[in-house]
Image (cartoon, rainbow, N blue to C red):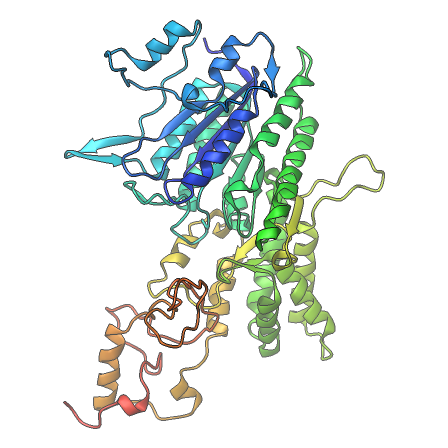
Amino acid sequence: MLETKECTLMFYFASDNPLAISVVSQLKAIKAAGFHKQANVIVQFDPFTEGTPTHVFDVNVINKINAKRESQTEFDNDDPFVMNLIDDKLWNGERTRNGKFVKKAISELVKGYDPPEPPVGRETINGENLEFGPQRSLQRFLEFCSYAYPAKHYMLFILGHGVVVGNDVFLFDENADEHSLKLATLGNILRNFSADVKLGGGSFDLLGFHSCSVSSLEVAYELQDTATYMLASQGTAFVGSWPYRQMLRRVFSALDGLSKNAELNGQTLKEMLTDLFFFCMHNSTDFLLAGYPFDLSLCDLSKIGTIREPMNNLSKALVRGLEDRRCVDMIVLAHWRAQSFYQEMYTDLYDFCFCLSEKITDFAGERTEALQNLLDACNEVIWALEKERPSRDRRGAEEKLIMCSEFAGPEYQYAHGLSVYFPWSTPNADRRILEEYSEYKVSGEEFETTWLDFIEAYLRATLREPSRVEQKKPALDGVQALYEDKISLVYTQEGPRTSQNALDGRGKTDPKDPTGGDCSCPSIKNYPKDIRDRREPKRAGDAVTVGETFLPTSAA
């Protein structure tokens, strides 16, 4: 029977992209942290080179076997040899040059060596060797950790490309059978893992997203019944920004402080995770030297229910406020002023409410019922999202959804911990993103009015009239209407907003890129366009695709 340890720390490095080279230094840091015999440290590393296998490491497994002490966080400082992870790799059927299984060959040299065999990361279909995508890969890794490394406490750190809300780049893997992982699928995987852990008497305590733009209300709500705490960024995150060596040593130190009959309790765990948060923040300060901002938040997902009613009231008040032109202008201006992330697609929820409440408070006109309701709803959300502060009796902090939230760099100075998806215009012609959003838990039946209800109402309310309608020109008919219909059917979506192959050079972001083609510029203009279903007739005046100069005066 496998021994149940105090902790199993899991590192899922989905770096089958240009991140892989930088991730190697993170692997070295995890190795250099040392070990504690009450902590399993399991790492999965997916290299970039096509055909190179995915590696799973039981970090310092041989050091634990050979060591007489319970823990060791400092190896011999006088030894110039830098330890590598090759000895920690778990083998699954690989053989030596003599035909002997690698695992058996190691066990003959290291008495007591018998680690489990890791899951296979690829399969052969019709003669083609296919790598598993992030869905199967993450699921199999977590299943492996739950049954092969039983523990009382589990912590998972995921490193890879972020942006999981309404996007297809989370944990992107170019060489896999499936390239990315959607939010709802991620929730199902983590929910199943949490259930498996509970069956074994353990708890899923921390979910750390070392990825860009993951700390959002949608993610927190989707994962509320998985891990207890979530560590993530609203904006950009960088490979070297989380000091894994120091973070692991903090965990080992906590384990050293336990007596034989003690275990990590809720308060000790919370203090430890708060320390991990500040380790990451302080370590990230030097990224300012390179000109990069950084933000981070630590959320208590068990408190996600505190935001349900305030969000319901806010969404309802916003939808009703859109019926008033003055209120629409205030909402748009607050949207414009508020802290934003990733191509203006995500907005800090606290800061949006703060900016909107300021506009309503400063409004010199009549305070209508709609404005008052909106002001009250904004203040409710602001209060719910305020990070923990010491209580009046100084016996700890008031427990809130956002435990810690900090920023480094002026670009993120209005970040407060959780963002929401808040596009300026309909994301794409087929509305795929909004349809996917409707499947999130944050769009569930427990909300009378959802944030998605507001987004759709907002996009309708801020949509400009077609230029022909605004200028009060007569609607097209006959040959001209037919001509524009034909153009609308082929010009259904704008191309990328870059200056690639253009002579003006606008959008240039890299001096090595003379055309500026590397720029991915967002649209904050909610202009009408033809987004009709191809099977349905177009309503007159829905969109203008060409100026009148292009319209024929007679049939061709």
